[in-house]
Amino acid sequence: MFSGIITDVGRVRRFSRAAGAGGVQAMTIATAYDVADIAIGASIGCSGPCLTVVAVEPGGFLVEASAETLACSTLGDWREGTPVNLERALRLGDELGGHLVSGHVDGVAVLRERRPEGESVRLTIEAPAALMPYIASKGSVALDGVSLTVNEVAERHFGINLIPYTLAQTGFGEARPGQRLNLEIDPIARYVARLLAARADHPEHRGR
Image (cartoon, rainbow, N blue to C red):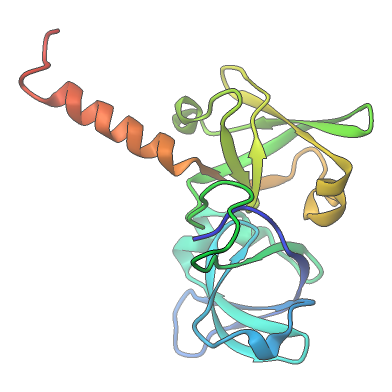
């Protein structure tokens, strides 16, 4: 579990095929984290997806992504040098500065427009149609692992505003129109929708 507060922007150092694992891609990510403090098996949020550390090396750590993860996220777009928003898993007692983020990507969104708005930057994001009902004005979403507040919602788009601090401390400083982004909806919205659907399907409520 994460909070969507990025604590380092790493870089993809190299790719390799995981030994004996068909379709699995191994990726080494350079980081400013103290790798001596990263346990093998630890979970780290990597621009959205929660990935498991399988090895560490000086200034970096190795993770593996399955073919399913590569297909359902932007990890298949990564290249050497790609910036990666990093967050260590929450510990009990940690400050929840953003919102609850599971590290399970719901879909891939696309950055359609980027424009300055005073000292901030306004982004217009196109989301998959199936996920738009879960996105609400003033609600929360995670984009590339970053907890963000939704400013406005249209039929297929929503807008967010990034302050200079967020631009400087995440990969959004380099994001440009056309870039694909890992989108995770607010888990609370997902469960509320599921409960409402179950209630509507219950015999007592049909036809009302």
